[in-house]
Amino acid sequence: MERLVLDTNVLVRLFRPTDDQHPEAAHLFLEAEDGGLKLVLPDTVVMETTFVLEGTYEVDRAEIRRLLGTVLGHAAVDCPGGDILIDALRRFAETRLDFADCHVAAWAAALDAPACSFDRDLRKFPDIKVRKPGKA
Image 1 (tube, rainbow, N blue to C red):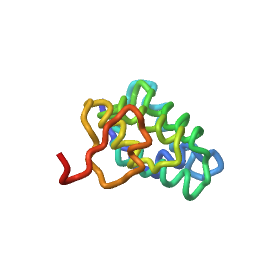
Image 2: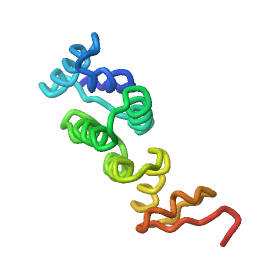
Image 3: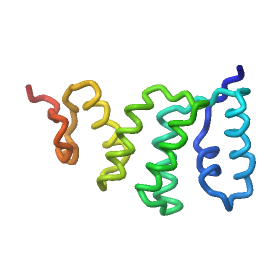
Image 4: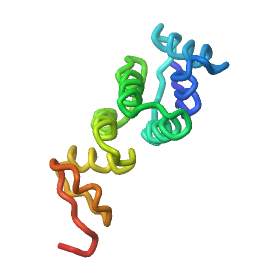
């Protein structure tokens, strides 16, 4: 089975039905559904996609969560750390924090380990602990 590593522009075009390249992006996922392809989705692409959809296209955070959650749940998509990304997307939709902070918080929760950061915003997540560097 052929494996393809997805880039951000494929997802953005998939989520933008008015884009000229939307049909090609949609066809890729249909081809994968037929069993001919395995689509690999790096976590950095999920992160960049949230940034582009929110910043460039002003897509609502809840809609970004829904769109990316659909892709992450697609049977032909292989996404290492997908459960952590789903949690990060939930945190992203429920807060005003950037996706990177939400991803760090999701990792901390998954590992049951403190996040290490100077950022006070991470303390907004009641399910994780935050440790400032240099403090024991």
